[in-house]
Length: 454
Image (cartoon, rainbow, N blue to C red; front, side, top):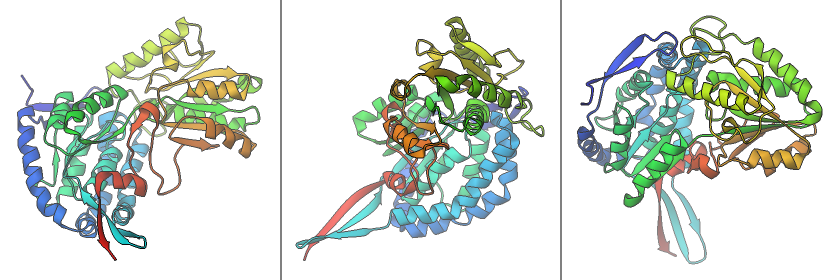
């Protein structure tokens, strides 16, 4: 029997944060039908008109950013400053994002000697947005906003781990939207699959590679449009001329941020043999300076795993690696509750599961290399291809290494994030379609070409 309420549990304390009503799977076709009816009116507006309907939500989101951040911190264990920062980022960028989406989707012309053609970005219809728990405000925001401005109606199914903050985000937008344009759906994988199988036109999913493959299979018979942002196993290559302080600082920050529960966390670190020991010393020193604990306590930089299952998975990978010859440089010890200590493993190899499968926890795995070709081969020895980074003082050399890494986003002496307007994109099994930036926004619409003879 399906439970009537879905409880959200604070992973740091085990306390119930709140509950939401579970959406019965047999109710989802009716919700999709209502969304399709609402889409007729919503889709009849222009992109600019839809953006104007949504624009007042920016101020409301800003007003409630602190409360939303506190709620997100309680639901998934993110340190409070990071959670509030996530909410503020969405609020502060809201108006600019609306303008960027509307501009990306505006009609434009192409012509030759014979024909003038208008390229028009029309709504696809009904969108199912299935979002993860690790960025419980940002991920719904990046899925819902372009879908709505493109003229689609949206059924938003947040992770069962973080339903409350997504519910509040939808509530704020629904203060300004017509009825049934944005509908939250609550539950677990059963509700997600029911949405995928329902009469929707677009499925936007952020989550694991395995779930993404199932979604793609279920969407195939109906030829539904699918945008999948999937997992990563991001490499960091530290060349022999790298600024080791900067490289170690980046490695610690990007491996342990949000307790490693980030799709572009640095999970594999390949270090030139000549600087391995010095790099590990610096990284260990910076790791031991981190404070872990209650994510609402001042100065805490690392919170808990989202649940006991995720903790067990991470610890099992650590145990397997140590059993196969990895050396514990820091962390690794068991802690109470859902906490896993920030852990550095050296002497790792690709025979270890932790170097092949996504960890999604606070573990940094280090392997030495003797040549750049070896480093590139190791970095590319994975089905994943989301983000990567290369550190080296010779920027031209580091950039040439970056060009050879098979990832959708590669940073040189920085993280993988690009300039404003760049898409968020993965290659290989880390992405199917992409989002953000003008190119990403256009994936939420159907291109139509209307031509007339001169």
